[in-house]
Image 1 (cartoon, one colour):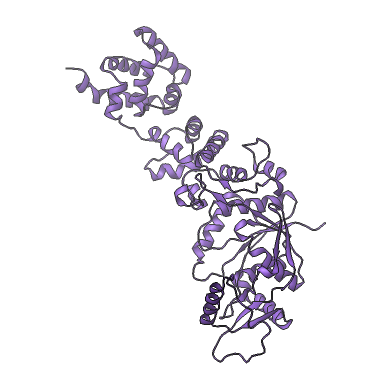
Image 2 (cartoon, helix red, strand yellow):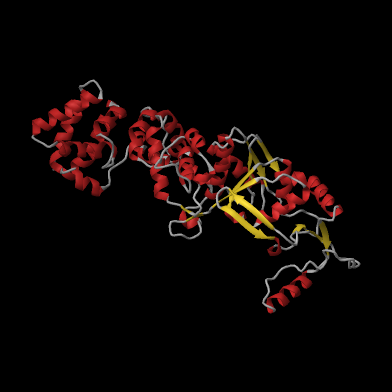
Length: 470
């Protein structure tokens, strides 16, 4: 049995977006599922738009997602000699030819065809021409597409696709400056790298019959093809920045976990029953191309956020603390100066959707916050302030555990005939500055006795002149 070999071949003309990441994931998973080889190839022949920075962003995104490759990265610009060698072979074998048609000639040809109601295409005037090449014209190289027959693609996702060769023109495989074109480079790469399965976006469906014809002309084995439908926005339009289609690395910046993004992408156009949350090991075990939908998937940022939340709940505090630390430092908080950040992260993880939200929610543990006046007015009535002073004194006298804190609160409520929220809410607001936190006794336990009493007394001193007449 032939060893499975797949590839992901991004072009570094921009960042790695969600569609590209999903294609990489499917190619990676297929190779892993079949104990095969996954190859990374950088198609950097677009010299005007390809940049080293974009290449690095792609490599960083693959590393962050954990999509490890077995071979590569290979760069097309480093393989030019090989492409020229194969071009020469095709020309010598009469399977490709020099075309000297000028831009003006091609434009005139196109206009005349349109005027006659024909589909505009190159008329193959130099295909078998014995005419003397015009002086001073640098020719392109065109592939001799078969004039008869059809290309049959048994697509692993879309099913059978049949394209008649008479629908295809003689495509350019080398430009007038000698540089090979995309469709030609891809063919040589797939041949040399012994690719057995090409899994890519269905925007490449039109390229596939052309590439198959070149492979056949070279006597190269044909890979199997699987074209994955595109990802649309929630409104059915092509995914764009307004839908949240940004660089994969932006999701790291926004506080998403890589495993959550992968889980979401795996479910975007592929399904296994009602399974929603699963590990990459499970995905690899289950993945098959037949499970990919033939219709376009729709990106749903709320669903991605929900999946990320599920992963946050399962992630240990130490890792969350490590991930959230840069966000905290950026916000002027040093999580090393205060409660154990891992324990804080474990307390907060149930209440947030992203690591960034976790860092925002953790600020009051490391920096005292003054409550907003409207929050004070709503949650800290003047008649509760003496009770707050009393509870501060009680706190000073106890062993600092969550249970002991709760007991003090419970006895204070009973002594003053209060309902529990009537005490807990003002206490929460005065100590944290926030009206919403996890259970107040858990928060106070983590903050520490000295810090809690200090904050309480500070806020009471601030409020005394405003609420209690001298």
